[in-house]
Amino acid sequence: MPIIVKDYTWQQSDKEIFISVPLKGTAAGHSSVMCTERYIKASFPPFLCEVFLFAPIDVDRSVTKIGNGIILFTLYKQEPCVWDSLCLANVTKETMQKLREDAIVRMQEKTKEDAQSKAVKKRENEKYSLEVMMKIDEDERKRIELVKEEERRKASEELEKFKEQQRIEEEKRKIQREQKRKEEEKKRNSLNKSMFSHSPQPCIQEKHKIEKSVPPTRKCGSIQIHFTPRVFPTALRESRLAEEEEWLQKQAESRRAINTDSLDLQDLKEEEKNPEWLKDKGNKLFAAGDYLAAVNALNLAIRLNDKMPTMYLNRSACHLKLRNLHKAIEDASKALELLTPPVPDNASARLKAYVRRGTAFCNLELYVEGLQDYEAALKIDPANVNVKSDAEKIRQIIQGTSLVPE
Image 1 (cartoon, rainbow, N blue to C red):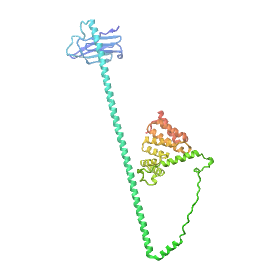
Image 2 (cartoon, one colour):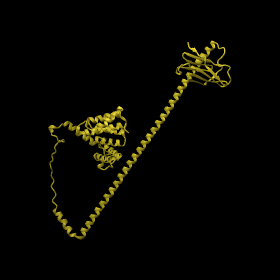
Image 3 (cartoon, rainbow, N blue to C red):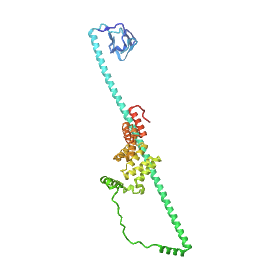
Image 4 (cartoon, one colour):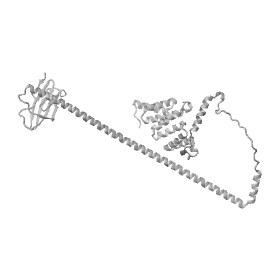
């Protein structure tokens, strides 16, 4: 049975009532209160204080504070007036029980309404947060599209400038060749005129002498030439005919794959139709820092011959410089696909392909995939100090023992 507290104090004005209930040594955290229009209750076991109010109060405006050893109720009257007393007089047990039940029902309803309003507010906040995030994502997507469009525009302008520069240089070369031809023709004409004007007879005699000194025309005949059927320099007893025939067939298919009959390739010079010449040109442009022009040269070389792994390997380096990381990964993977089977002769190229693909993965923050490529490179060359150091740094990043580099 709880101990009923009666030693509370109260004060009033026309609009407010102040009730102070002592906690009697009980901690504030162990107390609970209930407040309705005609009933208030304060429970702090083993004590209980309940008041059946003289008139109804405004529950929404009323405030309860617990602290400093007291529970302070600040109640606002619904109708401004002075009460004769705080509690109802001559309250029966049935009336008190009914007021308690009504208070409990109203508290439950209020709790339910508060929970519903809280849930509605939570949904509204979530909806607002989702809309804000969608707007941020949309703005970021638009920004990325603008950046991509700007990069494409710059690339197109640089390509047009390069083509215009090549056209101007070609016109200059044509003009120089034409001027040189005209100068040579002019020199020959002036030389002929001077020879005929000074000594016509000796020239005729010299001509007869030259005609007499010309040997007679050779007679028709045939020369027998015998070629060895061997394509490879190894001795026949040491060769493998099946593998050699397969290699020759692949080389023939590769040469047939060079399609220079398309309309957009007919205007190229003879050297520009040579993939090796284009590869060397791409290397020079890369060394000069013109990575976009190097990519264009290698693109044309790959169109002419897409079976050379060196082209893809060099283009992956250019894409790394241009921060085209996904394209760098594609080119490095294509180079590794062509560098099969793995033999000592292509070990250096395979090591470069693994390192470049691993670097692109790390720049995309895919450190696990990057570490796998670096470890594959170390299997090819375990003594490579630089690759070993970079692999250790990536391993520390994955383990969380090092900061991610800028």
